Length: 407
Image 1 (cartoon, helix red, strand yellow):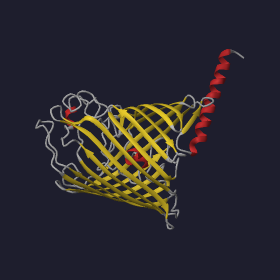
Image 2: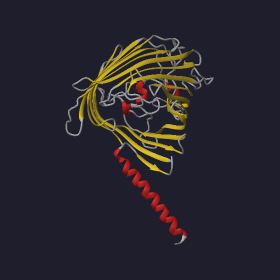
Image 3: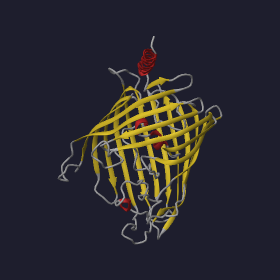
Image 4: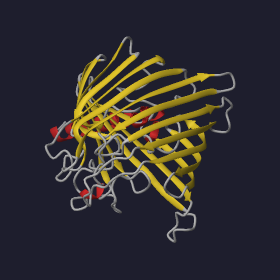
């Protein structure tokens, strides 16, 4: 047989093996292509889309809106060279409510969410470098795809980030005590490292989280989290904190940034279904200074959005969900309720056009909804009524009908 024919035959065999690997793995989320011992490439897809009707949300400013949005489209990729050296590259292209940029074309609205070089030496010690989710609260480490509700809790989850809870830096993490204790700590680019903002001298942000899983140890990957496991006993508490010197304010009136939170998740079979309860408390301290406006970036929109917008105050979260055991067609019903509250403190700005005094205010959000759970977080339909109460603005409400799929 000629050399070219041999090469073509080998290529066909490799492609066939790859396709078989992808087909065989379709029973689970994502597809895996093996390239030999301990070498593989994993590919997955995510989609969140919804219809929303919001009060005063139409173009005339007084009628209810009627909007169909693609909230999120994700491409998940991960790879492994050997048991230690691994990598992750996740991409997001959105046009709707969870979009992180304002472009109308896919090329303008396509972001690198994770780009991580991973050195995983042992379950107890791992080193990651690149863009990643920072150690923070449970909701941020859930991301929108692994919450127990439909909408991300933006009222309370306000840690700064370059992009949707992520920052660029280096972190170490591990699981100790038979995977009951999960720790993560790292240093990152940080907030307000921009001309005219508080951190012109380019200070790093330091972040850490400690979590103890009493039940359900080892159920989550890395230091990530989920806020419901759809029918498994789970009990976990966590504490997170972030600090950056001169991390908030303007160049003329700057303050140190310190934030911390504690969160709890409990899920248990109570006889007539699995009850899920989550709670969190937050404190955001800006040293009494008002942050600069995000409009400081208006002249350079291509730069990181991690500038401005931090508010000083306290926040609270409570949610509950009940997964009924009865099968209804393809899935099961899970009604849920979530409450959020943010109490902002009065702070002092430098009086400039981009840094103003912030008056104390209170924001509350109530979510009442039901999920139709077909395949956990991989296939779920949701209906939610949301009401927002503001102490210094007109109240709002909206209805959201959403679909979430992951492959």
